[in-house]
Image (tube, rainbow, N blue to C red):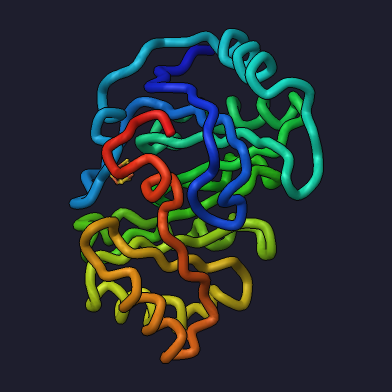
Length: 222
Ligand code: SF4
């Protein structure tokens, strides 16, 4: 089994409940979406084919023996859209079997049913401002694990905020999952978003992309 890999890099998780934790990222090549604000267009086509065992060896070598606890390093499969590769669930299963905590970053456009339950799924619900709001499988909500998985909204403008708020209210997703609202970097004012969440008493978490603050918005592999 082999995978087209854009990059493997060891850095700090910049988003979500695991923000700040050391993380080994595996970025698979390819994405069928074209979000207006995409910051990983370089992952659409560039990459090298790697055998599964070769990838697992690199994970073991770079992370060391699996550690556990709230601050332990973990491994995240990202993209592109990793689930565009039908073999991605097998890779996730193999990573879990190594003993590491494993996370998956996905747009929610591909079926989550084959993804192992223990994989932490960080699901990016695309908004109208992304240009890809229609690329969403509603059934994916049934495959997310309450209390474990995260639902993320990257908001391009105030209209996106109103849309995301109504979408969450209708489904009460915030009763089941961690819900994250973040601004599109350099587009929606972060302070405006933070204040809107507080004023509207929304049960969601505000976040910004930590890695972009630390290394700048153009730096790859961080
Ligand atoms: S899903 Fe992610 S990688 Fe694909 S176009 Fe959108 S932002 Fe870029």
